[in-house]
Image (cartoon, rainbow, N blue to C red; front, top):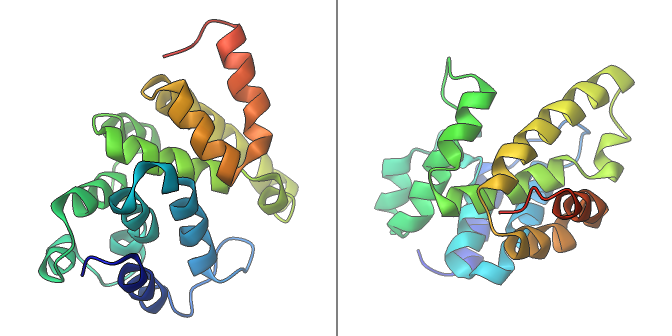
Amino acid sequence: MNSLSEVDALAAEAHAGQVDKIGVPYIEHVRAVAAGLAPFGDELIMAGLLHDVIEDTDWTADRLRGEGLPDRVVSAVEAVTNQKGVPYEEKIRRIVASSDATLVKISDNAHNSHPNRAAQLPEEKRARLAAKYRLARDVLWAAADDRDIEAIITIVNPSLLDELQERRHTGETS
């Protein structure tokens, strides 16, 4: 399985019937994350399409490899997958050990932070998630090149461009 259309079909089938926090079919989220990774080539687009498949479906890393997915793709997916008992902050620190996983998570974070999505959440949940995602960006963005971050967020969530510009202005660049 090496074509984007095959991986998209796998993701669509795996996430069939699932909805995100705001009730939208989950495949829309993974496709948005994948779109943000387009500047980095097909393997990262595949990782974006599959970034939640191990976590949220019955797919395993071994099964993905068995389908012929490149190890680079599966490794990035494994790196961004939540592990039981591992706090979110620790997960983010683990992710930045891999440049591929970092880019996937930056795109995921950008889509999860999109104002159109956040606006549909209850205020308390919106505030909690906004703080969580902002703290994650501090770690993720420090581990990536500003040009790569800008390429992703321009596609996925342009509202974050001001935050990136402010980061550059205050000298927190990578």
